[in-house]
Image 1 (cartoon, rainbow, N blue to C red):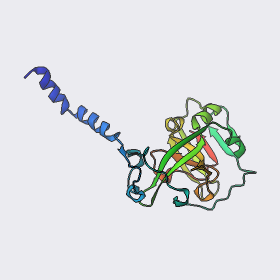
Image 2: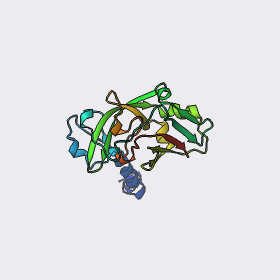
Image 3: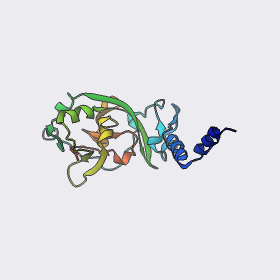
Length: 207
């Protein structure tokens, strides 16, 4: 038996190689069949699921949680983009609809409660952040909504927002986001649990 073979066996069982195998196993996603029952997903981690075959949830079957009756007056509402940027913006809804778009099928899981698989359309965040010119000091992006006592705040890595894994949607399954689901804008966060998908977003801050 050669020394090289013995050394190779030693590497195979070394702590470093074990960590590499573990890390590789962590990125292997489970491919969901098209007709996977939604209730089977309630306790799954969306980051570990490949949903490209999964059928969409009809909008009338979408479940939700948290505040559902917040009213947005589009005449006065603006989306604020500020923080570590060179060109802060205050955008009307009509202006948002002219921005570069992204469309993606993304699964939302609220653990133990529901799973919605929707076709989401919204703002290509990479284009929006390029427009405001993010400073080198920016590393995180914070989303807030709705304005007022029920405000929810969630923060994501800038790299996930620039890659459009996290974006703001204004349509789902070909229709404007219904009020109870966060009209006019809600966070869609691929691979994140649904409780981080902020509804009624009115402010984005680069930190």
